[in-house]
Length: 100
Image (cartoon, rainbow, N blue to C red):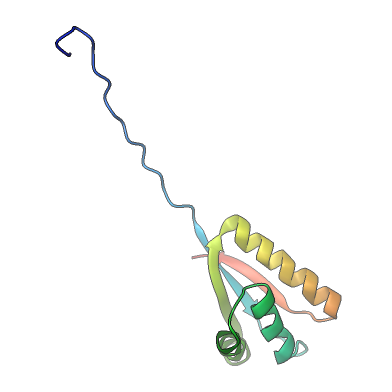
């Protein structure tokens, strides 16, 4: 109570949790060219040439490469964009997302 008989408001701070993050992953296949994977990494994921080449090598050697970590909506959009561009170009490049 304050001096005037009015109850003071108690500040309640709600905890705001960060939204879950998702890894976007490119998967290796026997048909998609290195050049197209690098193109996808530069255009969709805005990777500089050197980083795009490194991720492409990961895709080839390990079978997959992580393109980035995003919120769910952004990750979904990037996966859909990769699939659309791949289909238009005639490549079976597979892209998925998984919780980080």
